[in-house]
Image (cartoon, rainbow, N blue to C red):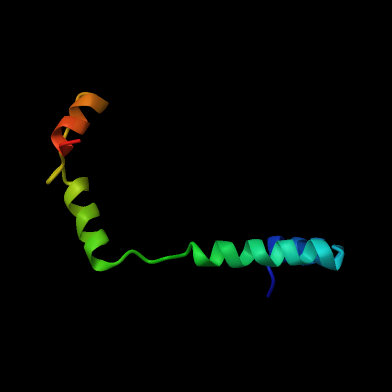
Length: 70
């Protein structure tokens, strides 16, 4: 069963000329490529920073650069 949104999208896509349809397909492919699942290291990093662990706090950009040694 199609949702209302799926029906609306199909109707809009069916009305597009081929030259514009290619742009829609390219955009859909782009969106699919952005559906990356974070790897294990990223998930662990998020858990630590969400808990306030291993976070370096800086008062401003200059402080940040100093702590980074830049």
